Image 1 (cartoon, one colour):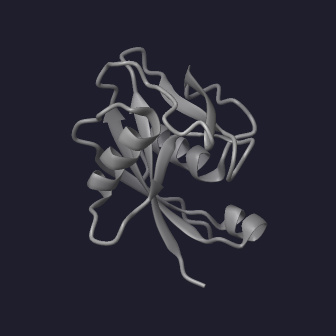
Image 2 (tube, helix red, strand yellow):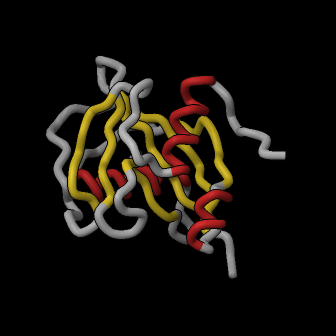
Length: 140
């Protein structure tokens, strides 16, 4: 088995709200920020831009890496080990749309201090690190 690298992208609007989706297939019924797996040869920033375009049809500009997460709770539950690189992007405007309804059934703008439940581990970690201005949680 190998470890998979993914990105999670916090998209923040002018009100300080973040964009979340409710998963309908893998990891359903969890709420989560958007993102996906890094392709071979791809930078984290390229992956973030591509995944956001594929998933919600908007083009983010200059996403910035701010943290990493090691998703061991999800590994224990599902047997798939993912390391997440978290990026932050400002909402560029335009109407986000569900481009992959088979993966995500609902979009909401949400106050990051009042997250909907159940919430996906990597997403919760990404939001907490961003709010606390930390790069990584030492899980030891």
